[in-house]
Length: 471
Image (tube, rainbow, N blue to C red; front, side):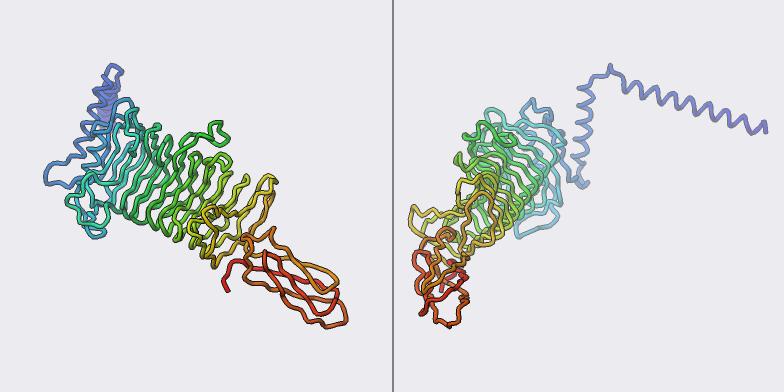
């Protein structure tokens, strides 16, 4: 037993001394006497070595911007460092192709590492024809000399040399970013790109557009917040709000679960086949000249607005053709304005919405015919909306009239949207008398339905009139 214990004791002593030595060395490394700047530079150097692999070895796909000299404190200008990181990422290894002419970067990431970076020029992509890239995780702020017409992140190429694709980029993702334009230009520009994703971004202090999409297809903007001024409503300077939260100048885009809390126009749409869902606009009240959603594509709107919240600011649609608005809530006398440009309205559904106002007699749907009346109206349905404190307007009106005589008149002007336009009438004639009168619809001009019988009888008539469908 004694012989066995001695080696064990010696082993314990050796282990204790080794542990003490380790702790002692660690304590020297943690000493406050060490220069913190030297320590930081050593980390940057080691990080840089990780992302600059020796020749012959595969290059990694994550580009930490501090490795390029970007200042995460926001004190120094980080423009050149960030542009170098972007350039390296776009010129990184190819993993085949996405769409024709779009190099697949294999999921490369430009990591902002939770830093706050000051930039004096737009972060514009240097080359076109790239895809499958993520920029994420930090804050960008425009400097005081940032170009007034620039965008903090500009997904458009400074050069198209060498690109054979019909689109500039494909599958570029911007995620978990705060963009502060410092009242100098805009936040994000996406130009002629395919399947771009903007997710969980906060964009503020823009003077032009928070996000602008020019051409391309399928830019998806999700779970983001945009506002020229940071406010939660009731701002004393609301009258002076300017700029546009989101400007869609392309087709087939989607805006989902987005809040626009200050701007003259919340969302401007001038492209086709776009979808807006779960949008909350309280950007600037209609009474101050603001618009929540402006559809500026007369003659071919093709826009769907569903499950959204228009908060003291409404929707304007020019010559709407194929427009669907449903399951949305309009608060604070917010309404829908259908604006005549060439007098065309076709394929419009405004159904199953809720409107709440202040009992000022404001119509929930209104017509702007200053440039001429709507002359081509077909397949328009404004119906099944509910109202509190506002005035119901619809293309379908229902009314009952009672009387003892030969003529019954139902005046439907208080409900019907279009003046002097009834295209179809259905009615039920119920009499309690013993006679069997002959009755007929005699007139429907000026939105007044006239029904007459050949005999004087006591009768109740139930009438449904429809303005929206052509005969």
